[in-house]
Length: 237
Image (cartoon, rainbow, N blue to C red; front, side, top):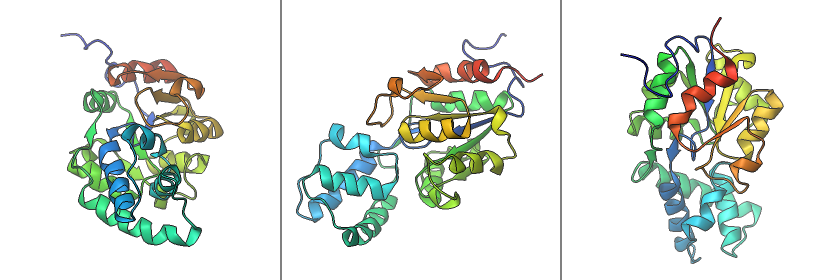
């Protein structure tokens, strides 16, 4: 039988590294993250936010989500208030990390195709590494990745290019044969600064539409990903 439509040929991406953002790219985590934010807001006597209002704040880590969330709810925080709220947020979120979070449609099949094509897959996320691995374990996705480089395993977080370069190096890759798949400006900034091709998904969490972030390719569904990677990198010689 021939390859499925959109599938990259076997071994065509040997030696390539495909790095992935997590929240809003691999997994739709918005309901659990915003649910935890709203739990915290309510506990502090602040009105919760609508999903559409809070969703774009995801992607720069929990501290940013809390700060922007409280600001959007007209309850801006003083610097000294953030850490205690962050501690409570993380504890609650970890207990509910996969209540509603699920991989985006077609994600698992695309990752399996990329692995079968010889690519090494790595997660490069501003989420803490422990929370990231807990989530991936809960969704049976850890088996698909060579490594997870969260906010605490990099010299600085995206959009700093060192985060992406650390992730690529962790799996023995070369930035000259790597791609970052993400959803937001933090991913765009990291990829451009690292001189790594960028694929953005159109269905993620971003304050600026993906189409306006200068990606090499924007995909609307994971079925498009294997061919997009092959077009950007070319087959292995």
